[in-house]
Image 1 (cartoon, helix red, strand yellow):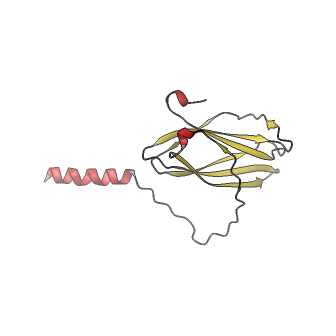
Image 2: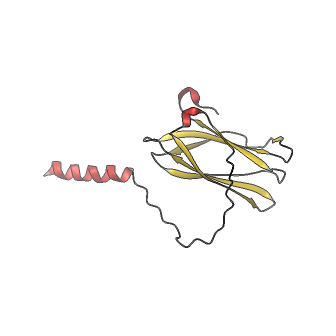
Image 3: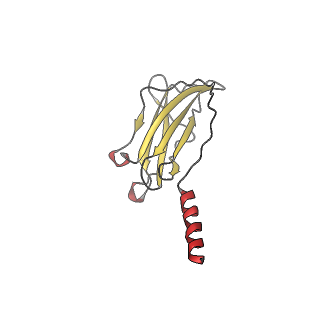
Length: 141
């Protein structure tokens, strides 16, 4: 009897570790500007582990560019990634910013998330997003 109860409790707890419930408005009224040519840089080690969805580009208060990137861990295990957004001016020159550091992103198996970045100056005209796997010798910060 106790073994059956422990087994039932264990299966409920383990089953809860892999499910994510999401609720969103079915009647959305927002309009997004999706970037068609994705300016993303990564090496072959991320193939089959990280997937990108929409990249949304908009302008917020003060004429600052803001991007939102949908990312998904397509790997069967949790993964840590690092990413960095670099902004460029109209002539293609990189804009050195206060926050040019790599940021860590932890995703559980098959989890999806979004990352955002806001340019620090209205001079930002374009961007590149760089991703790397954050484990062992590949970690870059």
